[in-house]
Amino acid sequence: MLTGTYPMWSGVRDFTSSGLPADVPTVAETLKRHGFSTAAFVSAYVLNSMWGLNRGFELYDDQMDLGGRPAGDLSLVTRSGDLTTTRMIDWLDGHRQGPFFIWIHLYDAHSPYRSPQPYAGRHPDSAYDGAIAFDDAQVGRVIAELRRLDLYDSSLIILTSDHGESLGEHGEAEHGFFVYNSTLRVPLIVKWPGGQDGGRTVAQPASTIQIPATIAQSAGIPDSECRTFQARSLARSGRGLRPPAATAAPVYAESYYARDSFGWHELRILADESFKYIDAPEPELYDLEHDPGERSNVIGKHELLVRSLRAKLQELERQYARTEVSVSPSPLDSDTLEKLKSLGYVAYQGGRQAPTGDGNRADPKEKIATFNAILRAGDLRRAGHHAEAARLLADLRSHEPSLYVLPFEAGENDLGWGKPQDAAREFRAVLQLNPKFDQALLGLGRACLELGQNAEAATAFELVLRISPQNALARVALARAYSGEGKPDTAEVELARVVKDHPDFGQGHAEYGEVLARRKAYEEAERQLERGMDLGYRDAESLNYLGISRGELGQHQAAVEAYQEAIQLDPRLAVAYLNMAIEYRRVGEATEAKRYYNKACALSEGLCRRYASQFAPQ
Image 1 (tube, helix red, strand yellow):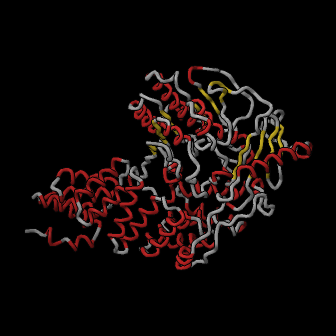
Image 2 (tube, rainbow, N blue to C red):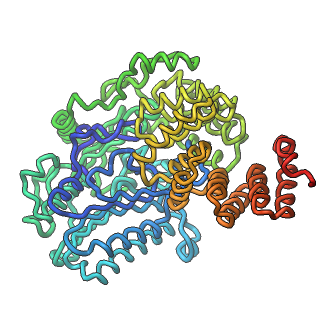
Image 3 (cartoon, rainbow, N blue to C red):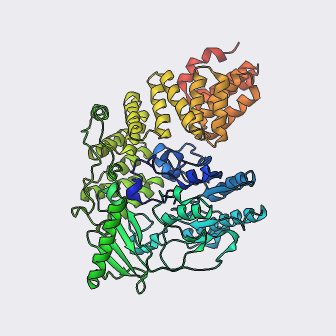
């Protein structure tokens, strides 16, 4: 949608990919060069700027309220569509003059399909339908704003999705695993500038890879600057849908999810108006005209057609593949291997993949029950049913002993269960199977932090950053480990980099402020902590340090307010009660000081003894 390139060219095939290469331009970069204001508003952490999709956008609004979520649960960090839409409308109101390009991304129609009232109430039997209705209302808000600003008629508006939802079809609960039309066939609605070709429907297959060329053509960008786009525009002469043409290229799609996350076979498809071919160990062909639900595999009835579609698929792969972009992770360097060995597990050259079409890989159709059980275990873990999740994962591991995702899920489950020692063992088991799985390294680091093993945690986070240098959460966690090792200066350097590289990352500002407060740089600490709060990060420890900074700067009432909020978030944070007592003693309010000191004593005998002399009766 943003680059107009095939995945074999861009090298980005799923979340195990290393990110968008620098030499693959986005349509936002092209439009920005031609004087367009550019902005993106996304609703999920999976599209955070650290993955490289922010190139060309003057504003890439990916601000999420991470709160106190653990680093391993980032897939759950989302922003409600109404909040994202409000931020987009606020930006548009200040950029109505001159051409603009906006990408707004809504995420509510992802499991568990959350929507507020009245949408949820209108669809009591389908949370998915409620979420769709909610997001539809947000699209309506955008259109209403464009009309209010008298921009609607002159705007090109494209409404689409990157996938649908299976909702049980073909045994798939959600999306991403299979390549059937339940997830591949999505809306593609184009409102052309000037109201041309209103209300037309085109039956011919189209692809989201055509969107950048369509935008560029409509914006009058010269063809010479669109050569990186690998699919032609949907428009004719910049206006209107192109007419049906017998020579139109078939549509390509793929899923490498089963391959790169589980070691099973990838799935690739080529489809035209009438037939769809799925390349798999057990290949499939569907007559879409007579079997739109793809229930009857007619692969044996159309031998010549299958040969033709298979040849076209192979030619497409050859045409757009490039050797300098590999679908496999790069080899581990020697320093990384040594650090892996120092953590106590065998350092394989992980991530090597067999050539496409390797018949030894399992057909995803044979693994859908396993895949669904893994999803079920994750749901149980997130719901707090840790014992049940552990039993399910143990059963799966008895059948799939080499599947590294299973010990990873077990490690995440143990962390949530309050068993960091067990979690560390599971994450090390993952890394025996897949040494370059950065999420397992992140999990190992988190477990070691909980165990007070700061040096081991630092090593794990350093390895994460070798694999994924822009992982802001890993860098924040690394700073925490350095602080635990007694290296505050090193921690401060890491957090300063986070703030510089990710200025809208609230947790980074907050933890940077904590480090600054510990070295008594109170003015800058207050500024950083308040910036973190402004960005939506509210954490009891950070509020405690904000109270310290304000108190040292003579802001008594503001300090008390920060401590009160810290206590509200964590009523058992003894140090916040103690600091509140110190603040009241500073301004001569002995009764309040004694009251909060007693509260601290009720929670921490150590703090009580350490500060007893300061609160002894005079």
